[in-house]
Image (cartoon, rainbow, N blue to C red; front, side, top):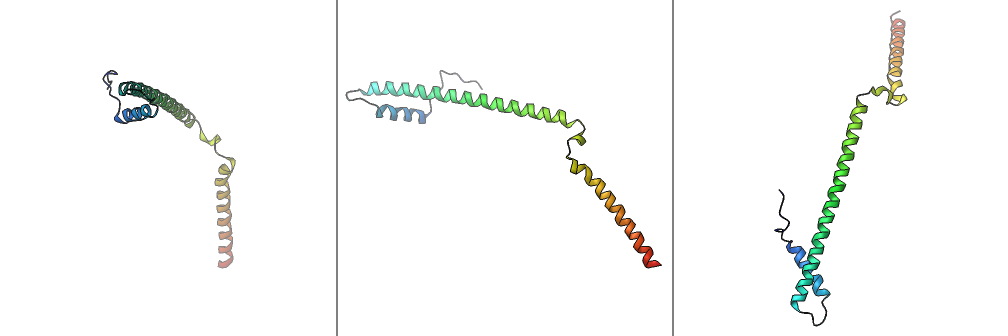
Length: 118
């Protein structure tokens, strides 16, 4: 999985980009060898930037995953505690209101049933 850093070849994209930049900044009277050397320096700079950027992204990703794990463990520990305290008060009253309403409807049914049978 680990690759030798000396054997890594730069991508073709990086090479062409470095050469374009070197040619764009070429001075009059500059030889092709000098331009190639400048392009190699630019290419090394691009590679170094990409490595730093990847390392930065890895660190950000590690921190994000660590925060997610800590949030997940927090929710698991609070999830084991009695959840009746966390429910809003209106949710706790709803079953009682429905129970009272059903008893009232049942009582009114009994009263009307006696009225019609009598």
